Amino acid sequence: MKRFFVAAVTTILTGSALAAGPTATEERIRRVQEGIVPPVMVQGESPAMQSLAARMAELKVPGVSIAVIHEGRIEWARGFGVTRLAGPPVTDKTLFQAASISKPVFALAVLHLVDAGKLNLDTNVNDYLKEWKLPDNDFTRQSKVTLRGLLTHSAGLTVHGFPGYASTAPLPTTVQILDGTPPANSAAIRVDILPGSKFRYSGGGYVLAQQLLRDVTGVPLPKLMRDSVLTPLGMTLSTYEQPLPKARALEVALPYHGDGKPVEGGPHTYPEMAPAGLWTTPSDLARYALGVRAALAGHSKIVSAKTARAMLTPVIDQQGLGPQVGGKTPRKFFTHGGANEGYRCLLVAYEDGEGAIVMTNSDNGGDLMSEVMRTIAQVYQWPDFAPAVRTLSEVKPESLDRFIGAYELNDGSPYVVHKEGDHLVGHIMGNPPRTLYPSSDHEFFARDIDIFLSFTLDEKGNPTAVRHLFNGWERTGSRAPEARSRELIADVEKSAQRFKDQKPQSGSEAAVRQLLTGLAIGIPAYDRMSPRLADITRQQLPGLQSYVANLGALKTLAFKQVSPAGGDVYDVDFEKGSLRIEMHLGSDGRMEDVNFLPR
Image (tube, rainbow, N blue to C red; front, side, top):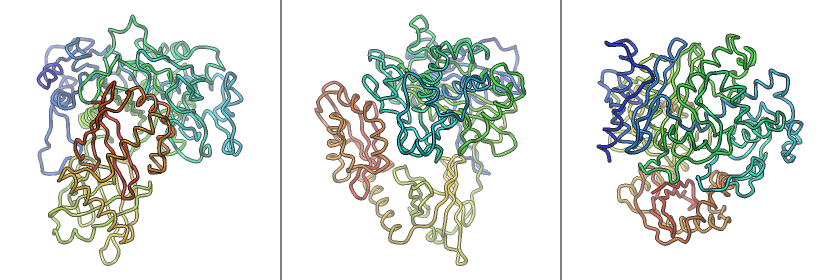
């Protein structure tokens, strides 16, 4: 299998032939293709780099498509690998599911109607909705749900994302999705926190916006998007049609799970078109990005320059009206990622005309797309996304002991630091441990992932707080009391020992069985879950229940391994299928995290 992937991913196609002889563009393509860079580079050390083909083979990603924007134009667009195992190669015209990148493209249609005077971003959505109304409650009576809130994930709505529907499954209407009624496989979309109070990602909010546009215009979303956004931007291969017309089936890169097996039945259908339903190519998404740039300059018939600037202005956290926005320097960018069943993709575009889009047909594509984007950032000298460059310092091993302890981060996650040999090891509970290397007497970094820690020291040189940076995302935290630190360190050491011994945690098998039984009948034991896991399970219960129930009766459950993150992994066989489950139990015996993986 690995040999096949290596052979397959060396196939490279482009929409136009390159001129004879090496050019600057060809050299940049070669560097991306041959030198995927690591997340961290250490000064004075030669970085370990791999080819794109090798990484695709390791991750079992059949196909990748890339488009790069340089100096305000699409400089190159190429496909790597194959659309399906033993199938044709990926080209720059191969279709992928854009998943959540559907959202910022859809947002242009909303803003187009705002500019036309047909919508107002700050009007109560129920003033526009006709076929269905968002139920009022104590939260909506205090603060109304608006289109501004929907586009910025700040409307207080539930349902993070959607699993889609297998090719043979019946499809719900938009109203059925909104109410969470069969055959919808997701929970009802409702307000359960005060609108405007915080950012909480909600694909459900975009489904509501999808219904609103249909009620206001009377036009089905695929046609509305084609006429108002896709065609004006030259996105001629793109469509929001769900399912994709059968006549276009051969244009598609088929989806694959992380284990290299194809998604059964092919691409899932997403009637949740606004948040997840766009079929497109990296080149077409590059045209979207360039279209936004043109709008900023006042050269767009879709939205005005004022509206385009509002779209790329943070409303809450780093969330604009559709895209997420950022930039460490005056060079600002907008971005969005996407994850559908068997597809992972990422868009990054700078306002000054640089950027890239990476699309893959694998659940493992998330790792690969980040690595490719990081490499492009390095090659094109972007101010963001490139590998972190760290300096390694010499620190006496005994001076590290003062950092041992737990730190309560401001997002509620405990960060635990303990010592293994001469090195500190740190991790957020439930995540793999990372060896930490000193860059000064109070700063540390990881080599295999972009994590940087800066400790605040008191007058005696003892740490009182920590600043935790992960891929540019900052969290801060104070040192926990000693009793709490000892408790958490003990949990970490137990997990490390269980990983070394490969012995499951007491009670984990019973917890897996109880979880599966509860999901199958739609009555999970929420009291056996952490509050966070219970909240996620409530939102996704219809889809989880359908998924587990359709597998049939439980036949065998066998312990497989302890993961590096300390979770117990079980292989489960059912009457009609099988899966792998990784479960983390807290010190109180409650389920902290559960991952369902194909097998």
